Image (cartoon, helix red, strand yellow):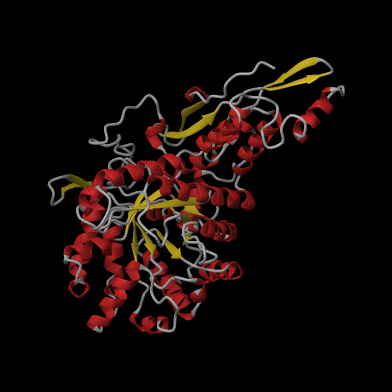
Length: 547
């Protein structure tokens, strides 16, 4: 065999775009891995068999397209700026910073849920259908994921497409049990660490490695400017927890929070382009005493803020009291609500307790109220949950919350591994995603220890991409098995380059390979040339006629 150094030139992985049929102007981006042929020697005769390309879901947007040059100061091109469909009525307004933004005209609604209930397939719906299928049709694989199916899942509230009209840079994606499991990457500065540039870099790193959404959890200075930098360069939806900025506006004094300050913050972020909000509206004042017997009390930052406000003012949660008005605001921009679990368990001991499930029931009530306002809604979940209690979380969420998509932090299945919580949580994440969770919030190795840097973000994303893909396989997603089968065949054929490019983390796979040896051959350094079972099997086949 002719030996050569392993390398992965970019030409072997291409950015390709598939066109829409209902909306021909759609260009749905994905990666195509062009595989090398399988070469076998059978009874002295060289046989060459072509391997079809494999299409991969791509969250990196134009950052993987070699034909596009990006100026981070100006932001990426607004993909959805000229999309329109039946019934959409938009007007231009100027925000307090003098920037032109968009909103639905007074008395009209811009949400994907509204149009789905009218039986209208929007460009977003066709886009995500094409994106989810990863060109299955070309490979001869039937898929149930059609634009009509997407519309029906949205109309039923079982899926959401976060798609703020002021974030046209974002490529549409869908969160729902019947679709591929998505992952979220948390970033954000604090008062003690990280700059605007560092947060934008972390956002881009998240997209590059596979995050489907980004949550900006900034609590330090320059929250608006940091978020603007992220939004204008993000090809994926961006979420926030608005209570953080509202608290910053009142100098960090919880007692000074009010509905008026929160409302102002909501509108500001809607106009800026945030795609979904975490809102802790289900934490009622009557549930707070239920947490006092917990080992770790209330660990949610948003939950801690709201509970303190309720106790200071001896009033009900103003987010619950004004929830209908919140929905009216969000409906003009197509901002989705992620109903926050302010009372999620912060340790294994507190899992599945009375406080957690009391809040979950209220979140179910809020789901119906939001749907009545045509606002897309999904539910946040725990937290820290041992393995034997994970399924109960999923079952109760489905029961209480009317099949709204579930979005979980892990859960972490043990508390004894600081520094490795991306692993402890990925174990739980794979399980709960198999049971039906639609999106997973990643955990980095620095969870409970510090603010993650770029490398921590990468480690967290990779752990969760593995968990999500494992769940997709278990659930039978139409495109999931294609990649596994292609990589397995490449491994059997000793097509090293193809193995790297089909892996979750091609860079690390190739780096580990090169640590063992620099040259391609029909074995790896784990077994060596004389003990490789696959090599021995291939040699046996080479001496047998036929295949």
